[in-house]
Image (cartoon, rainbow, N blue to C red; front, side, top):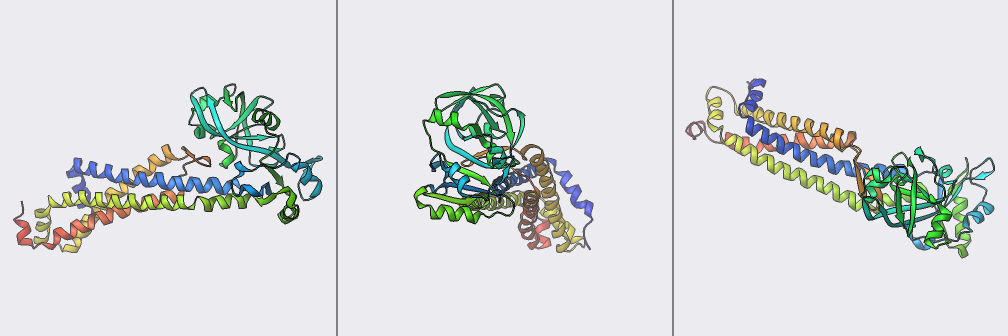
Length: 384
């Protein structure tokens, strides 16, 4: 015969202080799990949506995987457009975007020398970067910049410092913010975009970092790749943008593995914390448990009742942490080496967080309950 369901519920209410402390401890552990899993999911999401299968990046073969170190001739876009016919063309405009990409120190009204990512572009950039949308303001003119919605997080600055009309400084020049753009969560959202020619002037560079080319329907990236391999004098390399960000996924794989290891460590620490608190809770109830056995309840029924109490506490802690994570953590901007991205509390994060919470409830209750029930009824009834 099992103990009534309400017996375990009432036991939690009889010790409100201990129950509250246990709930707080479990909720803290589950919240840490939500933060780490949200970090992993946000990083993966940012990299996965950044690549476009129809966009080919052409950059220096000597830069390996780091486009910031790439340097190609300024005539490369014209040469590629004239030599290749597979790029998208509309209204007589080739969808080919020459870009100068640079990590540099950026100063705002509330942040000195923050590390930012600046991309010099032309009006063709939005034609190639099809996910980029101007959310307010206007496209930048000479001496102006348009900033991504996560640029302030990358700089460690407040969003008001990058409001329209505010000024920022980088590369020895002062720039006025003309607008803001979003890119569906892509890595561009942490960047600052300005006019290419103006950026080349202040950096005293006439070269480019890369050329982004939008393929026409039915065109293949192989033609561009073959051209770059044949023209060894240009020292160019062509790679689909989706493949480039897939390589970054592999580059950051150790970081993701380390984050999952942190999830395991936090979960393990939570199990030991739960064991400690449950041992204390069961130690004060030895005579109660012995009395239940004396009046006819089997040890298995008592064990299930104790596990029920632990699972109820863990479920409440998981629910509390889940609500806080969804309302306060989801979408929170995080700085990273590649730029910035947002924590993503999605279905996977909810499943992992709540699963860890319920596991803590079961694993935290079983060992102390088994230890208490091993003693004979006669000895347990004499316990103080």
